[in-house]
Amino acid sequence: MEYNTSLALEIDNIFYLTNSTQDENLLPFEKTRTLFYIFIEEVIARLMSEGDEKNL
Image (cartoon, rainbow, N blue to C red; front, top):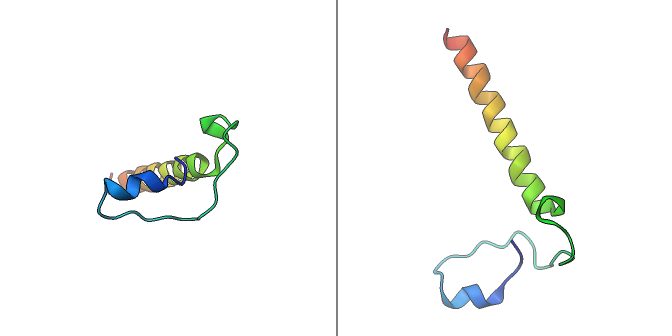
């Protein structure tokens, strides 16, 4: 979840959204990246359900 420079040796492509880190004392659900992914999943689920309703 966090900016980890040791991964650069193991992976070919890494995309960093930021070069800063969050407080390590935060719980996983309190981290902004986790909240972003939850939000995106909800948006996709809503769009898919609306698409299914239109196809009925």
